[in-house]
Length: 100
Image 1 (cartoon, rainbow, N blue to C red):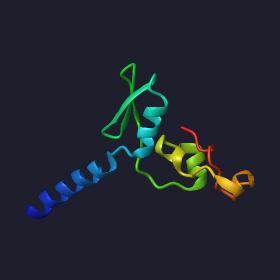
Image 2 (image 1 turned 90 degrees about the horizontal axis):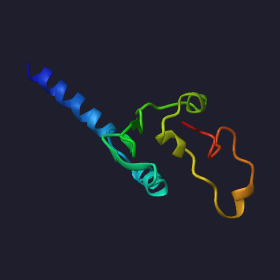
Image 3 (image 1 turned 135 degrees about the vertical axis):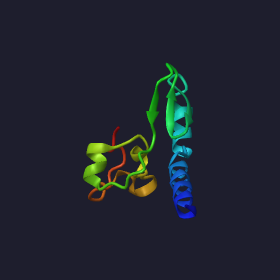
Image 4 (image 1 turned 180 degrees about the horizontal axis):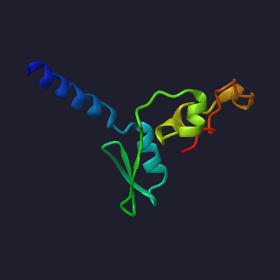
């Protein structure tokens, strides 16, 4: 019985660990205050009250990022800055290409 209770607690904690909004969610809210009001329990909260899953918690290949992206995945690749900012992107590394 103790092992079942421990397993249940572990499942709850792992779900809680995934249900955290990160600094990129905060950046979206700051950039689009007329549309977004918060990120709570791993969901972006829109001004009309709708909620959108922020991070599905899945590890994805590049093709899966293109086909099945969540909002968090849009931040998978940073935009290049500085001297190399106009260089062609590496294979399967393309900031701005991942869209939800």
